[in-house]
Image 1 (cartoon, rainbow, N blue to C red):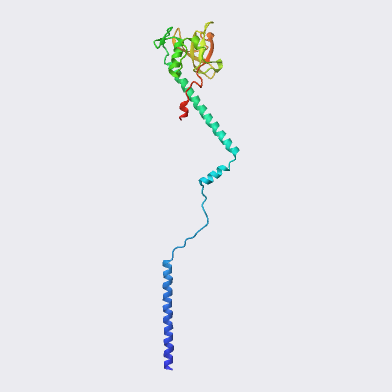
Image 2 (cartoon, rainbow, N blue to C red):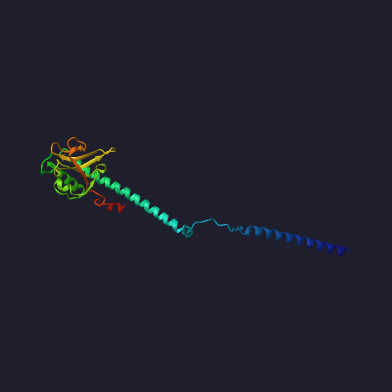
Length: 231
């Protein structure tokens, strides 16, 4: 009986120790897995929208040919308007430069046959101004200058046009339109026999009745617009 009790006791202790050892190993395994395991990477099928050159090209293809033509025509019209504005600005500048040259002669005395700032006549004054600023070579006398360019109506005159006068016979005097105001009143700069180079209104009591016609000798085809192509 005593031996049997001892055997039972020993079996119980062995089972107890086995249970303790098993528990210890299980605990170590859990700790090891916790420390060593890598963080979980979560994946998703969601993608951010992006615009690629290919997508842009496809979007352009979606524009109808008719719409593309309209866009192209609109761009051409815009470019043409811009070019016309620049040409107008350049033309006005050339006219202003010419009139500035003419104004530099103000007060120069009149001298028949004269061609310098010491003394100058009306036709020499005009050819000198146009030659210096426009590079044009006009005839020496007023009557020959009157054969140049295109005739313009009085209401269509603009600065830079030439105005011609006579006493009833051949053209004997010439001047350059200096300005035209909003009411259409014209002033011209010329070399008068009495006061030299001066500015007079076309309605002047002396010159008004002698006015015959106006000519335009500076047109778009004379102005050099090559600088616009370089901008």
